[in-house]
Amino acid sequence: MSFNWTQWFWPLAIVAVLALQVWYPDTGTGVLHDTYSPTADGQKAFYRLVSEQAGWTDRNTAPLSRATANGYLEPTLCILGPERWPTTSEWDAILDWVADGGELLFAFRGFEELSIPRLDIRYTPRMQDGPPDDSLPPDTKLLESRGIAWWTDGRLVAPKSEALVEYDGTTQAVAGDYGAGRYVVTASSLVFSNQLLTYGDNPLLAMRLLERTSYLEGVTFDESLNSTGTPKTVGLLLDRDLRPITLQLVLVTLLYGWWNSRRFGPLQLPAIQGRHNIVDHTDAVGIAYWRSRNGVAALSAYVQLLQLQFIERHTGRPVQHLWETAARKLGQSVESLQETWKVAHATAQQPKVERRVAADLIRQLARIRQAIL
Image (tube, rainbow, N blue to C red):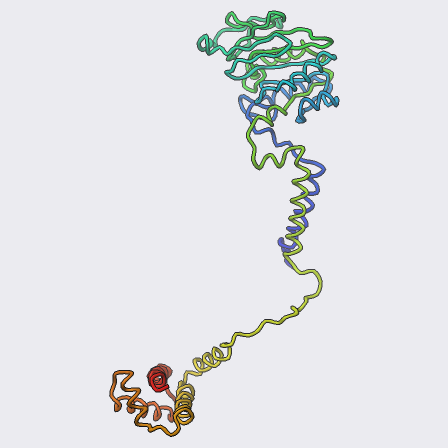
């Protein structure tokens, strides 16, 4: 017995959709610099490095206002070069959370001048001062090693914060206390990228920046600003909040397709039977004549029909008058029409006639019949 995949497609697809309701794989945020990305600008290596050192590490995809209010975050929150800048309400929620004892590691990114409210920290792109010199080493007291690199597109202006890293005469990382909590802000998220973590003691520098905010009891990497910062069309339906509804709609569609793809139960006859085509009998007779390879039956039947119509419809009228009428309509002589009739009548008496000859004679008799009737 052969295995038919078409019979198992629908139940397997339904089981897969039901499984996705319980477990859904992480598909990333659609950007190349998040903690899911293994690219040069991605931060997947830093996420794994912190996972080995911290007591607990996770990613946050819920809105920050809800995550801070409902206690979804670990003691330390990392926002590293977000795709979308936090709104005013999101900043209020983040800073209120820090003031209550939270710890924040934030990294700027991009070429737009930005500022963090209530912390008096402003980010200015360095493109206004010309391109940076990437060959210079940074100045920092976080570690003694000189085998580190620092890539940045901007600088920080933070008069109320402690400078942690300086580069080419500009402030690149600062730290400070806010309420009961602490914060570290950097002018570049590239220090946490996969590419820079492969150079010298850069992994140690990245961990030192994180350690200035926390004791690594638990770290949350925010991905909500990355996932909501990219345009979405179909991907919006697979967002965490809309995903259950989307999967339920897919499940209903699969059940409907399975229901209509095959018959369940005995076959039910239609209440109203379909009617045959009115020319089905004629088609069947024509096919039978063709398969017999003998046109005498069709020719004989047509000759008889023509004789009966002459008798029924023109009783009492002179036959010569009918021939003259047909000759006038067809533009032929009476003698030629009568000769055609004689040939057809004589041919119909033969035992076998080729189909092509019979068809040609029937076609000529049909023209005469139409002219007479």
